Image (cartoon, rainbow, N blue to C red; front, side, top):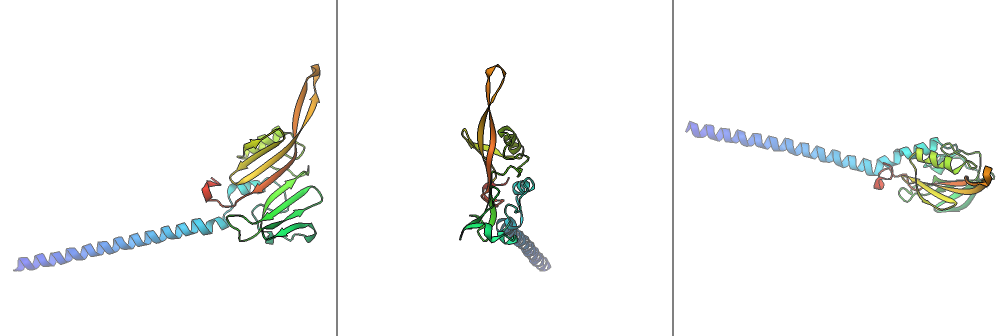
Length: 208
């Protein structure tokens, strides 16, 4: 009878241990799932609003403008006399020195109007070390050094991209007379556009 009692007691202890193990395992699984869920929410919906992709930082650090790409228009005191074409999607700032600034809403985070585009024929504004009037070869070299690739071109137009940043060059050709009556065509940058299409770090690997 004592043997039966001991067996029953041991069985109860064994079952209790199993229950404790299951409780601990359930707690671990629950905490792990909670952490994963919180991580996904942060990564997908919170992180992109506070993190500026490196490509955009690199762009802002290599062009001197009164505005930074990806920054909300509300952060700046923009003179109304320069503002044009105001609508629900944004507006333009058109200066008298050959610069046009575009403020628009992004398709991914359209909660505010941000600085997203720049056009210039101004010879004083350097982008990654080249300016309007410099040779196309110089512009092409510097853009590629900063991770941009040329994905479309013709005789007078070149388009580059890095992530979701597009840079377009309009070039003109001039013929230089050389000795022995040879002519060499030189391409120079006449104007350029910078368009920031998205600030989303995660979406489709835009900013790897």
